[in-house]
Image (tube, rainbow, N blue to C red; front, side, top):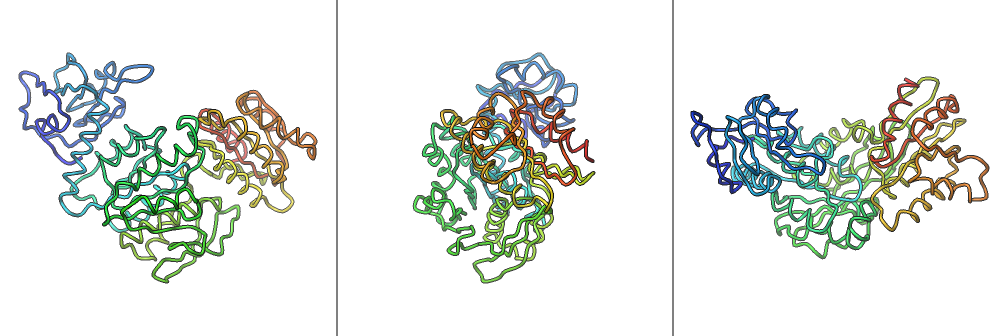
Length: 470
């Protein structure tokens, strides 16, 4: 973080500064990282005592102090001999401090901000942008999926005077959340990847999801750029709802930034990248799945608008060999068994894309095996969407499917009700039962996809299978 005095921080978060006596004055500078997890605090850092659903961050302030916290931001006074700022709401204070830091760094005239949202692909696109932009200048981007009202400002607070690029991943589970994050860090380039059924249960339907995702571009200025997926009609419609210039990406011939000659293999995807300047280049992309080409195009579009040369864009894309931990992560290999662990997130769109990838990349003579768990947060759409995925798996001729967990059992029922099948779908109550079955049933040459929402816990099953065949 840029150095701010205790007094400046208190003013930014609209809080009351409490100083120990004897102790530092209010002009003492603080420049450490900010945390809501006391275990991550290092000497000189700031600890935000965030209340949680199960516990309260204030209970962990002693550990933060023991680890060397220079400042506590709390909603009531604590008995510790370190500076404290008392605020009405520590989460809102976190956002307020992030807003102040972004504003100050931006005033230096160098910082450019790229924000990414979409029902699928945010984390992959963020990682690709980081890989491209850090070749040009110092870049700050989230770790993991830091994309909510806590994670996004924690990322913004990592800015320094030297930062050239901030990549902000912006997720939402309700209308207004993206708008709030944009008020902290208004992007120069706003990317919308896809409007799908992820979190549809919380939003109340796909049209509400569209309203929420449109917040990414609706307040952009005419000097900014909206990067929109032309292959998604809902995203493309946002072009009429922004004052910014629009750069379309996609496979459609009308796209400004597009891919041709897309080929998917078990080692990744190849395609030709075309820019609006007329330049083009072959790309060897190490991330599995043609659907990730769209994420690469989105990242390339933003980088191009920021002036990054084509060769640097391609080099950045080609340097990324996995989307993220537990996202199309290739494991195993022993006895010719390949495990693809993609069980960190699952929506109907991403589940369908992963199954199509599995069908495309299975080696001749080998079997496609899908291990599938629940797609969460679908609300009233859950039943029909699990049915749809079950029928898709049948129509893709996936050789063997293991459905895991009661919440996903409807997929299994849909598959066995499809009369063309005879025992290809197996149901397991728990990941442990699934592991026992798979450890005996998998054969040399099998390609295994493990796919579910995070809550189903199948990512750990994927790891165990990867170790079994490592």
